[in-house]
Image (cartoon, rainbow, N blue to C red; front, side, top):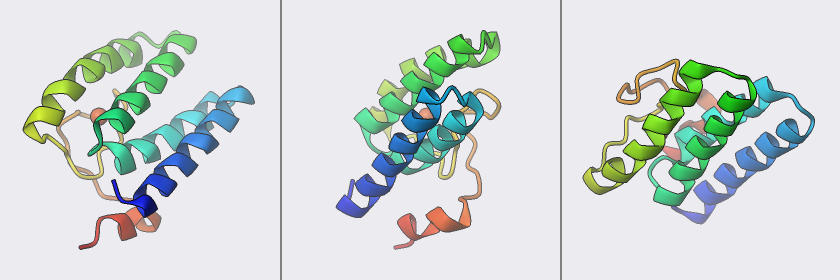
Length: 113
Ligand SMILES: [Fe+2]
């Protein structure tokens, strides 16, 4: 993870925690989705986003999200080994873990070569 990407990821995680502490779980999850897009190529960052998504799923008593996040947490290990990184994937249980998605315009700079 480049320093620039790491800063962007950490910024999303900070905003996620601020929203979480303010009990705005919708906004918190939104920042987690952005953090997932940025961090899914890094094992620890990827694991962390799914851990927090699980926490929010449980808090919302959202069975689908909670089960989906347990599966995604387990999948982080083989994904890391085999390099399964669907570009732009937001990480929530509302989308396939294997689906590539369009990247928000303001995050595109992190994916240009
Ligand atoms: Fe993921």
